[in-house]
Structure formats: C-alpha cells, structure tokens
Image (tube, rainbow, N blue to C red; front, side, top):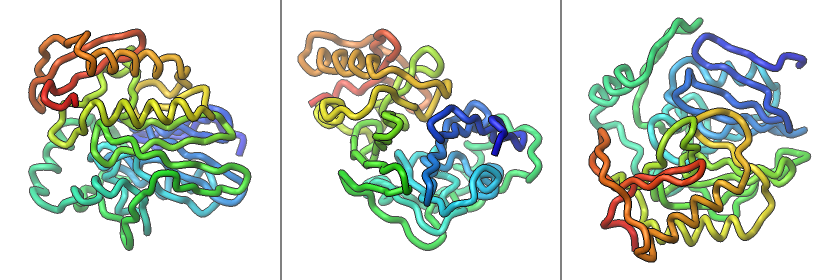
Length: 276
C-alpha cells in the first residue's frame, strides 16, 4: 500500500507513521488503526456512519481486533459492524437500546452529514458487537505480531474509560482521557457518568510513571502526535484542584454546568462534587 490518504467522503484515513493510521470522522472524532504483522487493531468505531469495517479493509488485509477507549456514542456507535468488541465493563453496562429515536436525532443534529459513497445507516444505538462484548482488564495485552498493545483502565471521563499503549511506537492512545485544548477543547469530567478526579489522577499518574511512551494520540483534535509533556501539565493541574489550590470558573455546556480550568495544551471541565 503506497497510499498515505484514503477517503470515502465521510471517513478519511491518514498514514501518520509507525504503521498507524488515523481515521478522521469528518472532524467529529479520531479512530486509530494500528497494524502489526499478524493482526491489526482499530481503536474506537465512531458514530457508526459509513461502513468502517469495509473502509478498514481498503487499508489492511488482516484480522482486526476492535477496542473502545470508552462507550460514548461518538466512539462506539460503529461496534455493531464487528463480531466482537473489547470495552470497559462499566461502559458495556451502559450500552442500551432505549430512546433510540431520540438518540438518532441527536446524532443527525450533531454531525454534518456529507456525501458518502454508502448512505448513512442508523442501526441500533446499543453499540453492542454482533456476537460478543468483552470486558477489558487492566494490563490486558493484544499481540499484533511485531507489536503488543497493553490496556490501562483509566476511569475519569467515563467509569469504563481505557487507554492503550503501543510500546513499539512509544505512543499512548488516550481516547477522551486526554484531549488537546488547542484543536478540540476541554476534557469533560463533569458528566453524570464521570469518575472522581482523584481516581483519575491516581490511575493516569500511575500510567505516566510506568513510562513506555513519548507521545499521545487523542480521540479528538488533530491527528498529530502530542508530546507526553502536556499530560504532565494536565495532571499537575488536576492535582492542584484536588489539593484545593485551584478552582475553575463556571461554564455551561449542553450536558450541564461545570468548572473550567485551562493550562498549557489542555483544559478541563469538572464537577465540584466529583473531586475526592
């Protein structure tokens, strides 16, 4: 494969090096295809618009492992195109077929549907895999042949959030556990299903201390590699909130109010009642 960019009008895949492709869903979210010698892994499945499974087959002809960084609709709606999907247990428990029409309407109003070769299909919102949803375990590994991907459960943005470490490329796939403020906006930790900041801080600080990565790739924003330095700044800021040294400014979002803090390369909106 000599191509470095592939698009169907909705999904655009960019070869960003290290045998990693960033799949940009029309600016809505990032998915990442990590290619080994024996298997590939797709990290997140997006809104479920267009045919992600077929799109991946245009890039690689290998068995594909499917994982979710978390279960929110912009990262897991495409799960039902695959036989099995790995996701955090707490988020799997939230997968639901309730209020389908309301949720489909939300998607249609939230994303800009452009011309795609295959018309958008809105199946069940439940984001369940065709056959099996498999809970992720902390430290679970996936052998792709010449590279091993390690799972780290990092409850925070959601209780079932996970990050994935590619030690060969020395990159951590963060989903929404870290998002770049310059090209996306604040990380949301004020959601009904968010975990305590102190829990997130302890877990993510532990992942950082283990080392093994120099850059991050986020579920939103530009596809470029983000130096680990910005995660250090983010965690230092959260520590200041936990210790009561910093308090954010009130900010309203479409899911409710929160407190916002901004730092170099990152920002957060959090719930004052979900700190410790």
